[in-house]
Image 1 (tube, chains in turn red, brown):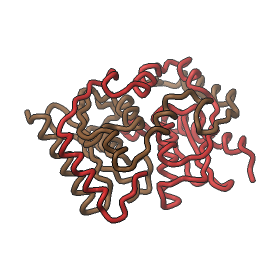
Image 2: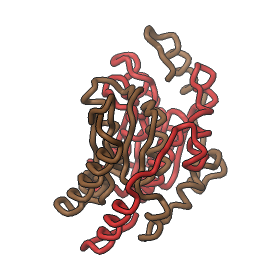
Image 3: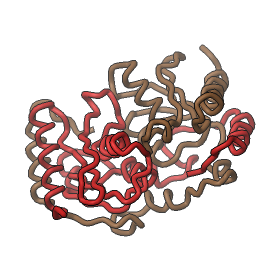
Image 4: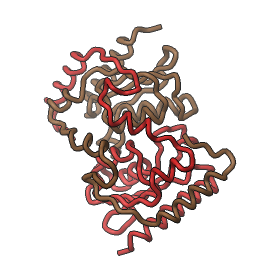
Length: 157
Length: 157
């Protein structure tokens, strides 16, 4: 079984290559199951026109495609940088069981990122966020949720 | 310019149709710019083998593809259910400026979702989370971030 540092070295290589060859940000991630790489991803926000294209999210998507399931129980995720809250929540939904990271969010702040507004937003309740939010048609949507609960194969996960 | 409730009704319809025709969860979202729908998405976690395939994330990705940019400044997002923290963070990264929601996360809990562990995870610092995390090769990754800062067109966003 390869050492964790071998997977991390591979993730750093992938990020560095994406930066040098594709003008991407050098953030990359790898999903590993039973000592094998099952998914890789790089941050491709600009090239993909996709604000959600962080390395961790892309690696989770790639692993899901490769394994044929959204459920990455039993998997570890290696990322070249401590994940933002979007990626932490993505790992939660994917059932990732262990995280290895290299640089930190403080290292990102040292090169110019301002992450405090994101942290403030995800740690606030809906009506206390900087993002203005209004509720509409709650009854109609709740009625659909109640219908869903009665569908065959319903599963809240 | 259509009323906000017209966009929300459309989102609820899209979610309901996905549930009835594709066996998807009935969570859907729409991105609107200047009174026009520029992106739509449904929760397709199971069908897409993608734990990140929430309605809001898919709508942000669709809008990015349609507009040719990750930056959804000036856009509003309509979602049939209050967004989870992954989707809130995705909206942050996409520069979504206003949120309309119908059902709430409490309505989801009423049909069986357990969201407290997600909230606890994103509101905790790295070493206080239920997800075990280890740091490896920080110096190497930090060195790549410093290289990135010197690349032409570098932008921390």
